[in-house]
Amino acid sequence: MKILVLNAGSSSQKSCLYDLEKVLLDTPPEPIWEASIDWTHHDGFAEIKVKPLHGKVLEEEISATSRPEIIAHMLETLWSGETPVLKSPSEVDIIGHRVVHGGAEYRQSTIINAEVKEAIAKLSIFAPVHNPANLEGIEAAEKVFGKIPQVAVFDTAFHAHLSPAAYTYAIPTKYTNQGIRRYGFHGISHQYCRDRAANILNRNIEDFRLITCHLGNGCSLAAIRNGQSIDTTMGFTPLEGLVMGSRSGSIDAGILIHLLRQPDMDVEKLDRILNRESGLLGVSGISGDLRPVLKAIDEGNPQAQLAFDVYVHSLRSHIGAMLASLGGLDALIFTAGVGENAPAVRAAACSGFEFLGLKLDLDKNNQRLLDVDIAAPDSAVRVLVIHTQEDWEIARECWNLK
Image 1 (tube, rainbow, N blue to C red):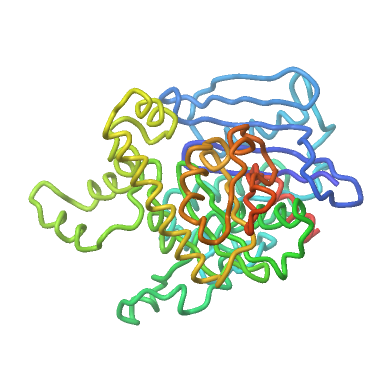
Image 2 (spheres, rainbow, N blue to C red):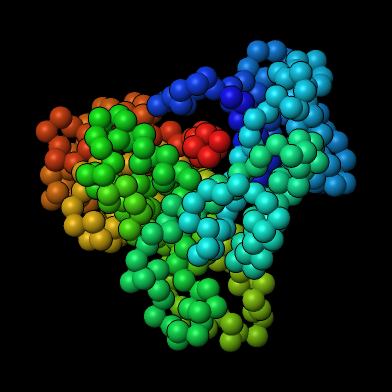
């Protein structure tokens, strides 16, 4: 069975093709084809990179006139070019798309039809950058593959079982009825890490209390009990919760009112400040990428140290909140760019929870191993570093709907 995965973002498009046998594997296989488009590196052009499992890598730059046409061109390299991996588009059995926002209606992955596309477009009011890009990928795939089934895998769906107490904001009910509530994001990643953790530790997800820490440029936590997300840090938008690379995370709403009263402030400027100029970048003045911040700390930069301390304080505080929701903890999981590659963050976060009997194996933590337990043998809580694989999780959802 050949499953094509499209993961469309505002500034990039990533795709891969899996060729699966009759049995779904527990661990992700290597894709037989991968491709990406970068819309931002060279203004007015799209950079395309295609990498078959066996064969020559294709790199080209073309005029960025129509995004769907460029996506279609990328997809056509599956059977055209120097190293085709398919004979024709009909060899693809099903196509999976990451869709950022499914609202309250879509609680699981869904076969795409006209009604689903209309809903994705309607929900663009909640995800104005991502949902339209997701639709572009769907429409490009329709153009290339015709009636081959397509599946929407919603990033919000994993959090669809939050209780009303967890998803309701304490605002007048008329606004809640307009759809203003906690949705949560990074659900595809949190779901993958839940299943991978159960596999690594040989545990049943039904009796497993987890906190998954997705720490990349965007950061979120999920509290998982009985296999379901019961609490999460991102909310109505991905801005809420943890301090992130360039996002502020949760701050006093009164600050926003105060800033909007200033004569040189408007909504667009405030949006830019909170989403693109805050977080690690805003405090350090250096970067939203943790690596240069850590380098500056080594060089004695006090603002870099403060940025790291604020980041870790926020992480510990929110882990504590998730812990309260769970009423206990069996495993703490770190994933995504920072979670997988920053031993200093993992060590600092875990040092706040020694009262639980959590103990790190510092040697393992510093080795930067993936898909392993880095807790000490006598730790009461297991600590895992897992390489998140959202594309594979999307492929698994397609397999289950085939």
